[in-house]
Image (cartoon, rainbow, N blue to C red):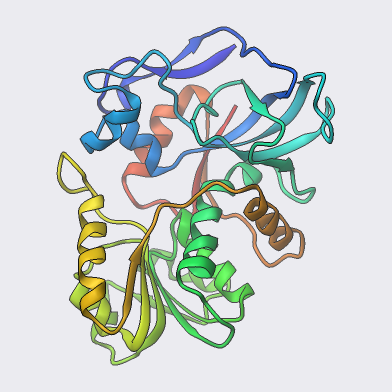
Length: 326
């Protein structure tokens, strides 16, 4: 079978599509024929080995032989182990792999992993766009932000993979939603449900005088003082992303500043990494099935062009998710 591998850290040029052995499946496993996978910032961090913190998992000097990329997927069940119940060959499924490896033609997954039947109304490409970005948006709003109906939420970075899910999920939770994006993406953010859209190239939202109950900061491109200025006295900042800075801990540096500052101010400042949860995948599927959330796809690349897919994601200009068709 074909799978993406890398044997050195560096630019997307280090990625290779190679012939590898089919994955073995045990009595509790599913063999899934991957039809589509999406790429996430996690992939380029491991690919580049930057920040160095990523190498604790992937390999200190060079990637381990077991190093893989890809956390999201959608596909069809090819075979099941003898103990598997609830899935059968031919079932269309979607989900994620916390250990990475979905950029491949076939993967082996435990039956109790984060995998569920694919929403019937989605293509494989749309379904593959859901897990990581959807988990991040849902958990940022519901779990960390404690968002309640009627509250005002500001989403900085509303047009990207996480942002497009965050706008739609916040609306589904009953919030008044303001999205921040560039000029070229204003129409998109409005079309997916934002009540208000701020073009950051024309207006400085940190000096508008508007106050919000929750700021989900995906772009991470404003200082913490500026972020606090747009919050109510008891408002909440949830830091999701940050620019790539520093070789050692990279975006985690901003998270550390948030953690240290939070006890000193009236507002609640928090940062987190999303967790892959089967229950939350079910929540996202329900939101999709009821028409409240629709994945937004920027571009779909073939597996042979995975380097171009990740290079495009790294530009930071994608509208929604970047997907790989397998």
